[in-house]
Image (cartoon, rainbow, N blue to C red; front, side, top):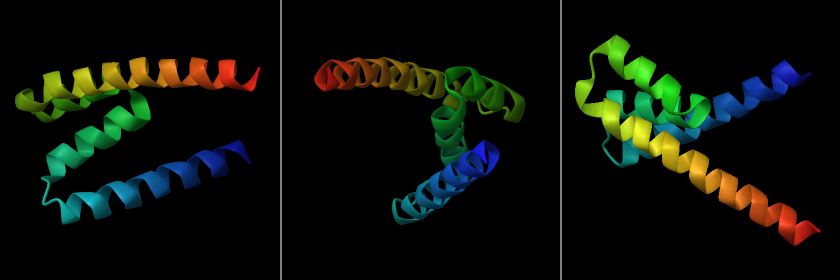
Length: 84
């Protein structure tokens, strides 16, 4: 059940990402990096950029993943404090 739930979340993520990317006229490499950052964090973004040779997307991917961790941690702690 957990695998099916995670698969549905990733599929919805990909559909929303690629539809928004199409409207914003983004490159497929940028969309793939955005997806890697959202799903796997900065380490998977660095691995994808290095493997594909996208040197210009390496630093933005790692930074976006790090900012995502920082913002997500802040929001998570804020929600827990709000619920108590």
